[in-house]
Image (cartoon, rainbow over all chains, first blue to last red; front, side, top):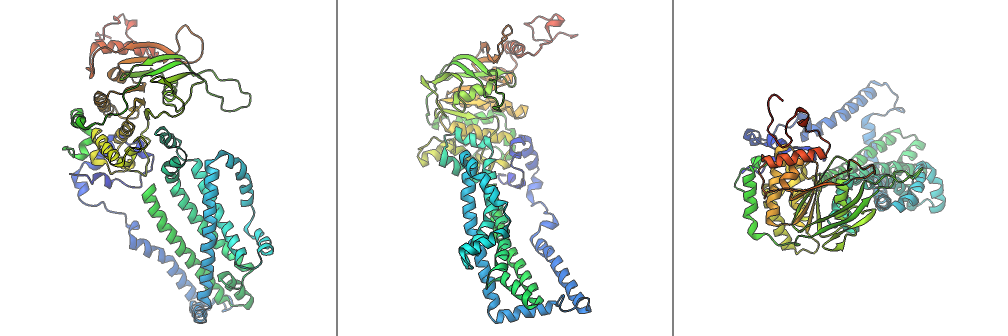
Amino acid sequence: MTETVPRTLPRTLPRTSARTVPDATAFAASAPAARTARAPRRPLASRGWIALGGGAVLPVLILAAWQLTTALGVFTMAQLPSPAMVWQAGVDLFASGLLGQYAAISTQRVLIGFAVGAALGIALGALVGLSRAADVLFAPTLGAIRAVPSLAWVPLLILWLKIGEESKLTLIAIGAFFPVYTTVSAALRHVDRQLVEAGRAFGLRRARLFTAVQLPAVIPAVVSGLRLALAQAWLFLVAAELIASSMGLGFLLIDSQNNGRIDRILLAIILLAILGKLTDAAVGLFERWANRKWA
Amino acid sequence: MPHRAAPHEAFADPASVRGAASRSTATTTTGNSACTVEFEAIGRTFAPATTRGATALPPVLRDISLTVRPGEVLAILGTSGCGKSTLLRIAGGLDSPTIGQVRIDGSPVAGIDPRCAVGFQEPRLLPWRNVTENVALGLPRGTPRAAGRARVAELIELVGLAAFAGHRPQAISGGMAQRASLARALARNPGVLLLDEPFGALDALTRLKMQDLLLDVHAQAPTTVLLVTHDVDEALQLADRIILLGRPDNDTRAGATIVQELTVPGARPRDRGSAELAELRGRLLAGLGIDRHGEARGLAATSTIPAFPY
Protein backbone atom coordinates (compact mmCIF):
# COMPACT_ATOMS: atom_id res chain seq x y z
CA MET A 1 0.00 0.00 0.00
CA THR A 2 1.40 3.34 -0.91
CA GLU A 3 -0.71 5.57 1.23
CA THR A 4 2.25 7.73 2.10
CA VAL A 5 2.64 8.83 -1.47
CA PRO A 6 0.78 12.14 -1.53
CA ARG A 7 2.67 13.26 1.56
CA THR A 8 5.68 13.74 -0.65
CA LEU A 9 3.84 16.51 -2.44
CA PRO A 10 5.22 19.83 -1.26
CA ARG A 11 3.26 21.15 1.69
CA THR A 12 4.01 24.67 0.57
CA LEU A 13 1.80 24.46 -2.51
CA PRO A 14 -0.28 27.60 -2.79
CA ARG A 15 -3.72 27.04 -1.39
CA THR A 16 -5.44 27.61 -4.71
CA SER A 17 -3.51 24.88 -6.44
CA ALA A 18 -5.70 22.14 -5.02
CA ARG A 19 -8.47 23.39 -7.22
CA THR A 20 -6.58 23.44 -10.42
CA VAL A 21 -4.44 20.32 -10.14
CA PRO A 22 -6.03 17.67 -12.32
CA ASP A 23 -5.99 14.05 -11.30
CA ALA A 24 -3.01 13.52 -13.52
CA THR A 25 -0.77 15.64 -11.35
CA ALA A 26 -1.16 13.53 -8.26
CA PHE A 27 -0.62 10.53 -10.44
CA ALA A 28 2.50 11.80 -12.12
CA ALA A 29 3.99 13.03 -8.87
CA SER A 30 3.44 9.78 -7.07
CA ALA A 31 3.62 7.00 -9.59
CA PRO A 32 7.30 6.07 -9.82
CA ALA A 33 8.02 3.94 -6.79
CA ALA A 34 11.69 4.87 -6.88
CA ARG A 35 10.87 8.48 -6.06
CA THR A 36 8.97 7.54 -2.97
CA ALA A 37 11.61 5.13 -1.71
CA ARG A 38 13.96 7.82 -0.42
CA ALA A 39 13.26 11.25 0.86
CA PRO A 40 13.94 13.92 -1.75
CA ARG A 41 17.21 15.85 -1.26
CA ARG A 42 16.56 19.09 0.53
CA PRO A 43 18.40 22.10 -0.74
CA LEU A 44 21.57 22.89 1.22
CA ALA A 45 20.34 26.28 2.42
CA SER A 46 17.27 24.87 4.13
CA ARG A 47 19.03 22.45 6.48
CA GLY A 48 18.77 23.40 10.13
CA TRP A 49 22.38 23.73 11.16
CA ILE A 50 23.34 25.50 7.92
CA ALA A 51 20.54 28.00 8.45
CA LEU A 52 21.68 28.65 12.03
CA GLY A 53 25.36 28.83 11.16
CA GLY A 54 24.65 30.97 8.11
CA GLY A 55 22.78 33.47 10.25
CA ALA A 56 25.81 33.77 12.57
CA VAL A 57 28.29 34.58 9.80
CA LEU A 58 27.52 38.27 9.57
CA PRO A 59 27.51 38.99 13.34
CA VAL A 60 30.87 37.22 13.65
CA LEU A 61 32.29 39.28 10.77
CA ILE A 62 31.00 42.50 12.31
CA LEU A 63 32.51 41.55 15.66
CA ALA A 64 35.83 40.80 13.99
CA ALA A 65 35.80 44.14 12.15
CA TRP A 66 34.91 45.92 15.37
CA GLN A 67 37.76 44.22 17.22
CA LEU A 68 40.18 44.99 14.39
CA THR A 69 39.35 48.69 14.09
CA THR A 70 39.55 49.25 17.85
CA ALA A 71 42.80 47.30 18.12
CA LEU A 72 44.32 49.34 15.29
CA GLY A 73 43.17 52.56 16.90
CA VAL A 74 41.09 53.76 13.95
CA PHE A 75 38.60 55.32 16.39
CA THR A 76 39.24 56.86 19.77
CA MET A 77 37.93 55.05 22.81
CA ALA A 78 35.29 57.74 23.30
CA GLN A 79 33.97 57.08 19.81
CA LEU A 80 34.04 53.31 19.76
CA PRO A 81 35.11 51.19 22.73
CA SER A 82 36.42 47.71 22.06
CA PRO A 83 34.21 44.61 22.35
CA ALA A 84 36.07 43.64 25.49
CA MET A 85 35.17 46.97 27.15
CA VAL A 86 31.49 46.54 26.29
CA TRP A 87 31.62 43.00 27.64
CA GLN A 88 33.27 44.31 30.83
CA ALA A 89 30.58 47.00 31.19
CA GLY A 90 27.98 44.27 30.91
CA VAL A 91 29.71 42.09 33.51
CA ASP A 92 29.97 45.05 35.92
CA LEU A 93 26.34 46.02 35.50
CA PHE A 94 25.31 42.42 35.89
CA ALA A 95 27.33 42.08 39.08
CA SER A 96 25.57 45.13 40.54
CA GLY A 97 22.24 43.49 39.71
CA LEU A 98 21.14 46.39 37.52
CA LEU A 99 21.50 44.66 34.17
CA GLY A 100 19.22 41.79 35.10
CA GLN A 101 16.70 44.20 36.56
CA TYR A 102 16.73 46.46 33.51
CA ALA A 103 16.37 43.60 31.03
CA ALA A 104 13.64 42.03 33.13
CA ILE A 105 11.58 45.19 33.56
CA SER A 106 11.87 46.05 29.86
CA THR A 107 10.83 42.54 28.81
CA GLN A 108 7.95 42.63 31.28
CA ARG A 109 6.73 45.95 29.91
CA VAL A 110 6.91 44.67 26.34
CA LEU A 111 5.07 41.46 27.13
CA ILE A 112 2.26 43.11 29.13
CA GLY A 113 1.83 45.97 26.67
CA PHE A 114 1.94 43.53 23.77
CA ALA A 115 -0.63 41.23 25.36
CA VAL A 116 -3.06 44.06 26.06
CA GLY A 117 -2.59 45.74 22.69
CA ALA A 118 -2.80 42.48 20.73
CA ALA A 119 -5.95 41.35 22.57
CA LEU A 120 -7.66 44.66 21.88
CA GLY A 121 -6.42 44.53 18.29
CA ILE A 122 -7.91 41.08 17.74
CA ALA A 123 -11.22 42.08 19.31
CA LEU A 124 -11.65 45.35 17.42
CA GLY A 125 -10.17 43.91 14.24
CA ALA A 126 -12.72 41.09 14.35
CA LEU A 127 -15.55 43.53 14.95
CA VAL A 128 -14.55 45.84 12.11
CA GLY A 129 -13.74 42.96 9.77
CA LEU A 130 -17.01 41.12 10.32
CA SER A 131 -19.54 43.89 10.76
CA ARG A 132 -20.20 46.43 8.07
CA ALA A 133 -21.72 48.79 10.63
CA ALA A 134 -18.68 48.62 12.92
CA ASP A 135 -16.50 49.21 9.88
CA VAL A 136 -18.36 52.41 9.03
CA LEU A 137 -18.35 53.52 12.66
CA PHE A 138 -14.82 52.71 13.83
CA ALA A 139 -12.50 52.36 10.85
CA PRO A 140 -12.02 56.08 10.04
CA THR A 141 -11.36 57.05 13.67
CA LEU A 142 -8.95 54.20 14.26
CA GLY A 143 -7.21 55.07 11.01
CA ALA A 144 -6.72 58.64 12.23
CA ILE A 145 -5.43 57.52 15.62
CA ARG A 146 -3.05 55.20 13.84
CA ALA A 147 -1.63 58.15 11.92
CA VAL A 148 -0.48 59.85 15.14
CA PRO A 149 3.30 59.36 15.56
CA SER A 150 4.17 57.36 18.66
CA LEU A 151 6.13 60.12 20.35
CA ALA A 152 3.18 62.49 20.18
CA TRP A 153 1.41 60.36 22.79
CA VAL A 154 4.18 60.64 25.36
CA PRO A 155 3.44 64.11 26.84
CA LEU A 156 -0.25 63.38 27.06
CA LEU A 157 0.23 59.98 28.65
CA ILE A 158 2.67 61.40 31.20
CA LEU A 159 0.23 64.15 32.15
CA TRP A 160 -2.68 61.76 32.41
CA LEU A 161 -1.07 58.66 33.84
CA LYS A 162 2.01 60.19 35.50
CA ILE A 163 5.50 58.72 35.11
CA GLY A 164 4.55 55.25 36.26
CA GLU A 165 4.18 51.88 34.66
CA GLU A 166 0.74 52.71 33.28
CA SER A 167 1.91 55.39 30.88
CA LYS A 168 4.61 53.14 29.43
CA LEU A 169 2.35 50.10 29.19
CA THR A 170 -0.32 52.20 27.47
CA LEU A 171 2.14 53.51 24.92
CA ILE A 172 3.40 49.99 24.18
CA ALA A 173 -0.16 48.70 23.95
CA ILE A 174 -0.95 51.44 21.42
CA GLY A 175 2.07 50.35 19.42
CA ALA A 176 1.09 46.66 19.51
CA PHE A 177 -2.57 47.33 18.82
CA PHE A 178 -2.40 48.67 15.28
CA PRO A 179 -0.52 45.93 13.42
CA VAL A 180 -2.89 43.36 14.89
CA TYR A 181 -6.02 45.42 14.31
CA THR A 182 -5.08 46.17 10.70
CA THR A 183 -4.17 42.61 9.72
CA VAL A 184 -7.13 41.00 11.48
CA SER A 185 -9.74 43.36 10.05
CA ALA A 186 -8.30 43.19 6.53
CA ALA A 187 -7.95 39.40 6.64
CA LEU A 188 -11.51 38.89 7.83
CA ARG A 189 -12.81 41.13 5.10
CA HIS A 190 -10.97 39.07 2.52
CA VAL A 191 -11.86 35.56 3.63
CA ASP A 192 -12.59 33.56 0.49
CA ARG A 193 -16.24 34.34 -0.21
CA GLN A 194 -16.75 31.00 -1.86
CA LEU A 195 -15.71 29.19 1.31
CA VAL A 196 -17.99 31.35 3.42
CA GLU A 197 -20.86 30.70 1.03
CA ALA A 198 -20.14 26.97 1.12
CA GLY A 199 -20.23 27.12 4.91
CA ARG A 200 -23.57 28.93 4.79
CA ALA A 201 -24.93 26.47 2.24
CA PHE A 202 -24.24 23.69 4.74
CA GLY A 203 -26.20 25.42 7.43
CA LEU A 204 -23.45 27.29 9.31
CA ARG A 205 -24.45 30.68 10.67
CA ARG A 206 -23.00 33.38 12.89
CA ALA A 207 -20.85 31.94 15.68
CA ARG A 208 -20.54 28.51 14.06
CA LEU A 209 -19.68 30.04 10.70
CA PHE A 210 -17.06 32.20 12.43
CA THR A 211 -15.38 29.36 14.31
CA ALA A 212 -15.61 26.84 11.45
CA VAL A 213 -14.66 29.00 8.47
CA GLN A 214 -13.69 32.60 9.12
CA LEU A 215 -11.46 32.22 12.16
CA PRO A 216 -9.32 29.35 10.81
CA ALA A 217 -9.02 31.18 7.50
CA VAL A 218 -7.46 34.25 9.11
CA ILE A 219 -5.21 32.56 11.68
CA PRO A 220 -2.06 32.77 9.52
CA ALA A 221 -2.70 36.50 8.98
CA VAL A 222 -3.38 37.03 12.69
CA VAL A 223 -0.12 35.37 13.65
CA SER A 224 1.92 37.46 11.23
CA GLY A 225 0.14 40.52 12.63
CA LEU A 226 1.19 39.44 16.12
CA ARG A 227 4.77 39.17 14.96
CA LEU A 228 4.72 42.70 13.59
CA ALA A 229 3.06 43.91 16.78
CA LEU A 230 5.81 42.44 18.92
CA ALA A 231 8.47 44.27 16.94
CA GLN A 232 6.42 47.44 17.27
CA ALA A 233 6.13 46.86 21.05
CA TRP A 234 9.92 46.93 21.44
CA LEU A 235 10.03 50.11 19.37
CA PHE A 236 7.51 51.82 21.60
CA LEU A 237 9.22 50.51 24.73
CA VAL A 238 12.39 52.41 23.95
CA ALA A 239 10.37 55.51 23.08
CA ALA A 240 8.66 55.30 26.46
CA GLU A 241 11.78 54.57 28.48
CA LEU A 242 13.95 57.16 26.77
CA ILE A 243 11.68 59.92 27.89
CA ALA A 244 10.41 59.03 31.30
CA SER A 245 11.77 56.17 33.33
CA SER A 246 14.12 55.16 36.09
CA MET A 247 14.69 51.60 35.00
CA GLY A 248 14.91 49.55 31.85
CA LEU A 249 17.09 49.36 28.76
CA GLY A 250 15.79 52.65 27.38
CA PHE A 251 16.72 54.29 30.68
CA LEU A 252 20.17 52.68 30.44
CA LEU A 253 20.55 54.31 27.02
CA ILE A 254 19.60 57.82 28.10
CA ASP A 255 21.45 57.54 31.41
CA SER A 256 24.60 56.38 29.68
CA GLN A 257 24.31 59.18 27.17
CA ASN A 258 24.21 61.71 29.99
CA ASN A 259 27.21 60.08 31.67
CA GLY A 260 29.15 59.63 28.47
CA ARG A 261 29.24 55.82 28.89
CA ILE A 262 29.37 54.80 25.27
CA ASP A 263 30.24 51.23 26.24
CA ARG A 264 26.92 50.93 28.06
CA ILE A 265 25.05 52.48 25.12
CA LEU A 266 26.45 49.78 22.85
CA LEU A 267 25.62 47.19 25.49
CA ALA A 268 22.00 48.36 25.65
CA ILE A 269 21.67 48.32 21.86
CA ILE A 270 23.08 44.81 21.63
CA LEU A 271 20.78 43.62 24.40
CA LEU A 272 17.74 45.13 22.65
CA ALA A 273 18.75 43.34 19.47
CA ILE A 274 19.12 40.00 21.26
CA LEU A 275 15.93 40.27 23.30
CA GLY A 276 13.91 41.45 20.29
CA LYS A 277 15.26 38.61 18.19
CA LEU A 278 14.55 36.02 20.89
CA THR A 279 10.93 37.06 21.41
CA ASP A 280 10.46 37.27 17.64
CA ALA A 281 11.87 33.75 17.25
CA ALA A 282 9.40 32.51 19.86
CA VAL A 283 6.47 33.98 17.92
CA GLY A 284 8.07 32.65 14.74
CA LEU A 285 7.93 29.11 16.12
CA PHE A 286 4.28 29.64 17.00
CA GLU A 287 3.70 31.00 13.50
CA ARG A 288 5.22 27.90 11.91
CA TRP A 289 3.06 25.67 14.05
CA ALA A 290 -0.07 27.68 13.25
CA ASN A 291 0.68 27.67 9.53
CA ARG A 292 1.15 23.93 9.55
CA LYS A 293 -2.14 23.47 11.32
CA TRP A 294 -4.31 26.06 9.61
CA ALA A 295 -2.82 26.93 6.24
CA MET B 1 -9.99 -0.72 2.45
CA PRO B 2 -10.14 -0.58 -1.32
CA HIS B 3 -8.24 -3.41 -2.90
CA ARG B 4 -6.78 -1.31 -5.69
CA ALA B 5 -3.46 0.49 -5.45
CA ALA B 6 -3.96 3.94 -4.06
CA PRO B 7 -1.91 6.10 -6.47
CA HIS B 8 -3.69 4.62 -9.42
CA GLU B 9 -6.98 5.29 -7.78
CA ALA B 10 -7.40 8.47 -9.78
CA PHE B 11 -7.34 6.44 -12.93
CA ALA B 12 -9.43 3.58 -11.65
CA ASP B 13 -11.90 2.35 -14.21
CA PRO B 14 -15.50 3.32 -13.62
CA ALA B 15 -16.35 -0.30 -12.84
CA SER B 16 -14.25 -0.28 -9.71
CA VAL B 17 -15.74 3.01 -8.53
CA ARG B 18 -19.11 1.50 -9.23
CA GLY B 19 -17.99 -1.55 -7.29
CA ALA B 20 -17.27 0.62 -4.30
CA ALA B 21 -20.68 2.13 -4.68
CA SER B 22 -22.56 -1.11 -4.79
CA ARG B 23 -20.61 -2.59 -1.91
CA SER B 24 -21.89 -0.01 0.50
CA THR B 25 -25.46 -0.12 -0.78
CA ALA B 26 -26.59 -2.36 2.04
CA THR B 27 -25.52 0.04 4.75
CA THR B 28 -26.71 3.30 3.20
CA THR B 29 -28.79 5.19 5.69
CA THR B 30 -32.05 6.47 4.37
CA GLY B 31 -32.11 10.23 4.28
CA ASN B 32 -34.70 12.78 3.33
CA SER B 33 -36.93 11.22 0.75
CA ALA B 34 -36.68 12.89 -2.64
CA CYS B 35 -38.54 16.20 -2.82
CA THR B 36 -40.65 17.89 -5.45
CA VAL B 37 -39.29 21.25 -6.56
CA GLU B 38 -41.71 23.76 -8.07
CA PHE B 39 -40.58 27.00 -9.65
CA GLU B 40 -43.49 29.41 -9.86
CA ALA B 41 -43.00 32.23 -12.37
CA ILE B 42 -39.49 32.98 -11.19
CA GLY B 43 -37.90 36.25 -12.25
CA ARG B 44 -34.59 37.68 -11.07
CA THR B 45 -33.25 41.16 -11.62
CA PHE B 46 -29.97 42.23 -10.09
CA ALA B 47 -29.55 45.67 -8.55
CA PRO B 48 -27.04 47.89 -10.35
CA ALA B 49 -23.57 47.89 -8.82
CA THR B 50 -23.55 51.64 -8.27
CA THR B 51 -26.50 53.66 -7.04
CA ARG B 52 -25.57 56.69 -9.12
CA GLY B 53 -27.69 57.00 -12.23
CA ALA B 54 -29.37 53.77 -11.28
CA THR B 55 -31.80 52.52 -13.82
CA ALA B 56 -32.96 48.99 -13.14
CA LEU B 57 -30.91 46.46 -15.02
CA PRO B 58 -32.71 44.10 -17.38
CA PRO B 59 -33.83 40.86 -15.74
CA VAL B 60 -31.55 37.86 -15.86
CA LEU B 61 -34.35 35.35 -15.54
CA ARG B 62 -38.07 35.69 -16.21
CA ASP B 63 -41.21 33.58 -16.22
CA ILE B 64 -39.63 30.35 -15.22
CA SER B 65 -42.25 27.86 -14.20
CA LEU B 66 -41.27 24.28 -13.80
CA THR B 67 -42.02 21.29 -11.66
CA VAL B 68 -39.32 18.76 -10.90
CA ARG B 69 -40.65 15.40 -9.81
CA PRO B 70 -39.19 13.57 -6.81
CA GLY B 71 -36.18 11.52 -7.77
CA GLU B 72 -35.93 13.13 -11.18
CA VAL B 73 -32.62 14.28 -12.61
CA LEU B 74 -33.16 17.58 -14.35
CA ALA B 75 -30.36 19.16 -16.34
CA ILE B 76 -30.39 22.91 -16.85
CA LEU B 77 -28.53 23.82 -20.02
CA GLY B 78 -27.75 27.27 -21.29
CA THR B 79 -25.07 29.50 -22.68
CA SER B 80 -22.56 31.11 -20.40
CA GLY B 81 -24.05 33.90 -18.29
CA CYS B 82 -27.69 33.06 -19.05
CA GLY B 83 -28.64 32.64 -15.41
CA LYS B 84 -28.40 28.86 -14.95
CA SER B 85 -26.46 29.15 -11.74
CA THR B 86 -28.75 31.90 -10.49
CA LEU B 87 -31.75 29.61 -10.95
CA LEU B 88 -29.98 26.87 -9.01
CA ARG B 89 -28.97 29.26 -6.25
CA ILE B 90 -32.56 30.42 -5.98
CA ALA B 91 -33.67 26.80 -5.57
CA GLY B 92 -31.23 26.34 -2.70
CA GLY B 93 -32.06 29.63 -1.01
CA LEU B 94 -28.58 31.07 -1.62
CA ASP B 95 -30.27 33.75 -3.71
CA SER B 96 -33.87 34.91 -3.71
CA PRO B 97 -36.05 35.60 -6.73
CA THR B 98 -37.23 39.14 -7.48
CA ILE B 99 -40.64 37.76 -8.31
CA GLY B 100 -42.17 34.33 -7.99
CA GLN B 101 -41.23 31.67 -5.54
CA VAL B 102 -39.79 28.20 -5.24
CA ARG B 103 -41.59 25.50 -3.32
CA ILE B 104 -39.96 22.33 -2.12
CA ASP B 105 -42.55 19.70 -1.27
CA GLY B 106 -45.09 22.46 -1.17
CA SER B 107 -43.40 24.74 1.33
CA PRO B 108 -41.76 27.90 0.03
CA VAL B 109 -37.98 28.30 0.15
CA ALA B 110 -36.89 31.18 2.36
CA GLY B 111 -33.19 31.37 3.06
CA ILE B 112 -30.82 28.47 2.96
CA ASP B 113 -32.89 25.34 2.87
CA PRO B 114 -31.89 22.34 4.98
CA ARG B 115 -33.50 19.99 2.47
CA CYS B 116 -31.05 21.03 -0.24
CA ALA B 117 -27.35 20.32 -0.57
CA VAL B 118 -25.13 22.12 -3.05
CA GLY B 119 -22.20 20.80 -5.03
CA PHE B 120 -20.33 23.81 -6.36
CA GLN B 121 -18.30 24.12 -9.51
CA GLU B 122 -15.19 24.38 -7.33
CA PRO B 123 -14.66 21.84 -4.54
CA ARG B 124 -14.72 24.61 -1.91
CA LEU B 125 -13.22 22.37 0.74
CA LEU B 126 -11.85 23.95 3.90
CA PRO B 127 -8.07 23.79 3.35
CA TRP B 128 -7.25 23.28 7.03
CA ARG B 129 -9.51 20.23 7.39
CA ASN B 130 -8.79 16.79 6.02
CA VAL B 131 -11.19 14.97 3.71
CA THR B 132 -13.07 13.27 6.55
CA GLU B 133 -13.57 16.53 8.46
CA ASN B 134 -14.64 18.29 5.30
CA VAL B 135 -17.24 15.66 4.48
CA ALA B 136 -18.45 15.81 8.09
CA LEU B 137 -19.26 19.49 7.56
CA GLY B 138 -22.16 18.35 5.41
CA LEU B 139 -23.82 16.28 8.15
CA PRO B 140 -27.15 17.72 9.25
CA ARG B 141 -27.07 19.47 12.61
CA GLY B 142 -27.76 17.24 15.54
CA THR B 143 -26.45 14.05 13.94
CA PRO B 144 -25.26 11.74 16.73
CA ARG B 145 -21.47 11.58 16.76
CA ALA B 146 -21.10 7.85 16.14
CA ALA B 147 -23.75 7.77 13.42
CA GLY B 148 -22.14 10.81 11.76
CA ARG B 149 -18.74 9.19 11.79
CA ALA B 150 -20.10 6.02 10.25
CA ARG B 151 -22.00 7.95 7.59
CA VAL B 152 -18.92 9.99 6.66
CA ALA B 153 -16.76 6.88 6.39
CA GLU B 154 -19.41 5.24 4.22
CA LEU B 155 -19.63 8.24 1.89
CA ILE B 156 -15.87 8.50 1.58
CA GLU B 157 -15.81 4.82 0.64
CA LEU B 158 -18.63 5.47 -1.83
CA VAL B 159 -16.70 8.15 -3.69
CA GLY B 160 -13.54 6.03 -3.57
CA LEU B 161 -11.47 8.25 -1.29
CA ALA B 162 -10.97 5.84 1.60
CA ALA B 163 -7.20 5.86 1.14
CA PHE B 164 -7.16 9.65 1.25
CA ALA B 165 -9.54 10.25 4.14
CA GLY B 166 -6.79 11.78 6.26
CA HIS B 167 -5.39 14.06 3.57
CA ARG B 168 -5.85 17.79 3.33
CA PRO B 169 -7.43 19.17 0.12
CA GLN B 170 -4.11 20.55 -1.13
CA ALA B 171 -2.60 17.05 -1.05
CA ILE B 172 -5.23 15.51 -3.32
CA SER B 173 -6.03 16.14 -6.97
CA GLY B 174 -8.84 18.30 -8.31
CA GLY B 175 -10.94 15.28 -9.23
CA MET B 176 -10.58 13.80 -5.76
CA ALA B 177 -11.44 17.14 -4.18
CA GLN B 178 -14.57 17.32 -6.32
CA ARG B 179 -15.53 13.82 -5.18
CA ALA B 180 -15.00 14.87 -1.56
CA SER B 181 -17.23 17.86 -2.28
CA LEU B 182 -19.92 15.52 -3.65
CA ALA B 183 -19.61 13.33 -0.55
CA ARG B 184 -20.05 16.42 1.63
CA ALA B 185 -23.24 17.31 -0.22
CA LEU B 186 -24.53 13.74 0.13
CA ALA B 187 -23.74 13.77 3.84
CA ARG B 188 -26.60 16.18 4.22
CA ASN B 189 -29.03 13.46 3.10
CA PRO B 190 -30.56 16.00 0.78
CA GLY B 191 -34.05 15.78 -0.60
CA VAL B 192 -32.77 17.93 -3.45
CA LEU B 193 -29.20 17.78 -4.69
CA LEU B 194 -28.18 20.98 -6.47
CA LEU B 195 -25.12 20.61 -8.67
CA ASP B 196 -23.64 23.72 -10.25
CA GLU B 197 -21.42 22.54 -13.10
CA PRO B 198 -19.83 20.12 -10.64
CA PHE B 199 -17.52 18.52 -13.17
CA GLY B 200 -16.84 21.55 -15.34
CA ALA B 201 -13.30 22.11 -14.10
CA LEU B 202 -12.23 18.49 -14.46
CA ASP B 203 -10.38 16.92 -17.34
CA ALA B 204 -12.48 15.02 -19.86
CA LEU B 205 -11.80 11.50 -18.61
CA THR B 206 -12.25 12.33 -14.96
CA ARG B 207 -15.49 14.05 -15.86
CA LEU B 208 -16.88 10.91 -17.50
CA LYS B 209 -15.99 8.85 -14.44
CA MET B 210 -17.58 11.40 -12.13
CA GLN B 211 -20.75 11.21 -14.20
CA ASP B 212 -20.87 7.47 -13.74
CA LEU B 213 -20.24 7.92 -10.04
CA LEU B 214 -23.13 10.34 -9.81
CA LEU B 215 -25.40 7.86 -11.59
CA ASP B 216 -24.43 5.15 -9.11
CA VAL B 217 -25.10 7.43 -6.19
CA HIS B 218 -28.46 8.40 -7.62
CA ALA B 219 -29.42 4.80 -8.37
CA GLN B 220 -28.69 3.98 -4.76
CA ALA B 221 -30.50 6.86 -3.13
CA PRO B 222 -32.76 8.41 -5.74
CA THR B 223 -32.85 12.02 -4.62
CA THR B 224 -34.08 14.84 -6.83
CA VAL B 225 -31.13 16.29 -8.72
CA LEU B 226 -30.90 19.69 -10.40
CA LEU B 227 -27.80 19.75 -12.51
CA VAL B 228 -26.54 22.94 -14.10
CA THR B 229 -24.21 22.25 -16.97
CA HIS B 230 -23.05 23.68 -20.26
CA ASP B 231 -22.03 20.27 -21.45
CA VAL B 232 -24.74 18.84 -23.71
CA ASP B 233 -23.33 15.33 -23.53
CA GLU B 234 -23.28 15.44 -19.76
CA ALA B 235 -26.91 16.50 -19.71
CA LEU B 236 -27.89 13.70 -22.10
CA GLN B 237 -25.96 11.12 -20.14
CA LEU B 238 -27.30 12.02 -16.71
CA ALA B 239 -30.69 13.65 -17.01
CA ASP B 240 -34.26 12.38 -17.24
CA ARG B 241 -35.27 15.74 -18.58
CA ILE B 242 -33.36 18.70 -19.96
CA ILE B 243 -34.44 22.31 -19.99
CA LEU B 244 -32.67 24.82 -22.15
CA LEU B 245 -32.50 28.39 -20.84
CA GLY B 246 -32.21 31.24 -23.26
CA ARG B 247 -34.11 33.92 -25.16
CA PRO B 248 -36.75 32.75 -27.60
CA ASP B 249 -35.97 33.72 -31.21
CA ASN B 250 -39.01 35.92 -31.78
CA ASP B 251 -38.86 37.57 -28.37
CA THR B 252 -37.09 40.87 -27.82
CA ARG B 253 -37.61 40.98 -24.08
CA ALA B 254 -34.49 40.66 -21.96
CA GLY B 255 -33.92 37.76 -19.61
CA ALA B 256 -33.62 34.06 -20.10
CA THR B 257 -36.52 31.69 -19.85
CA ILE B 258 -37.16 28.08 -20.74
CA VAL B 259 -36.91 27.79 -24.54
CA GLN B 260 -36.78 24.02 -24.88
CA GLU B 261 -37.73 21.17 -22.69
CA LEU B 262 -37.09 17.60 -23.64
CA THR B 263 -37.30 14.22 -22.06
CA VAL B 264 -34.27 12.08 -22.66
CA PRO B 265 -35.25 8.62 -23.91
CA GLY B 266 -33.88 5.41 -22.52
CA ALA B 267 -32.82 4.22 -19.12
CA ARG B 268 -29.53 5.12 -17.53
CA PRO B 269 -26.70 4.37 -17.85
CA ARG B 270 -27.05 5.30 -21.50
CA ASP B 271 -24.83 4.31 -24.33
CA ARG B 272 -22.56 7.26 -24.88
CA GLY B 273 -22.46 6.49 -28.60
CA SER B 274 -26.16 6.09 -29.30
CA ALA B 275 -27.49 7.66 -32.51
CA GLU B 276 -30.66 8.80 -30.79
CA LEU B 277 -28.72 10.80 -28.27
CA ALA B 278 -26.55 12.19 -31.02
CA GLU B 279 -29.63 13.57 -32.73
CA LEU B 280 -30.84 15.16 -29.50
CA ARG B 281 -27.36 16.53 -29.02
CA GLY B 282 -27.53 18.27 -32.36
CA ARG B 283 -30.88 19.79 -31.51
CA LEU B 284 -29.69 21.04 -28.15
CA LEU B 285 -26.54 22.48 -29.65
CA ALA B 286 -28.66 24.26 -32.23
CA GLY B 287 -30.74 25.62 -29.36
CA LEU B 288 -27.55 26.90 -27.76
CA GLY B 289 -26.73 28.75 -30.98
CA ILE B 290 -24.09 26.33 -32.20
CA ASP B 291 -24.14 25.66 -35.92
CA ARG B 292 -24.31 21.97 -36.73
CA HIS B 293 -22.48 22.52 -40.02
CA GLY B 294 -24.52 19.80 -41.63
CA GLU B 295 -27.62 21.20 -43.27
CA ALA B 296 -25.69 23.67 -45.38
CA ARG B 297 -24.07 20.77 -47.18
CA GLY B 298 -27.34 19.06 -47.79
CA LEU B 299 -26.92 16.35 -45.22
CA ALA B 300 -30.12 15.07 -43.72
CA ALA B 301 -30.63 16.49 -40.26
CA THR B 302 -31.44 13.07 -38.86
CA SER B 303 -28.22 11.47 -39.98
CA THR B 304 -25.34 11.70 -37.61
CA ILE B 305 -22.98 9.63 -39.71
CA PRO B 306 -20.79 12.02 -41.62
CA ALA B 307 -20.79 11.44 -45.35
CA PHE B 308 -17.51 11.80 -47.17
CA PRO B 309 -16.54 14.17 -48.76
CA TYR B 310 -17.76 16.59 -46.16
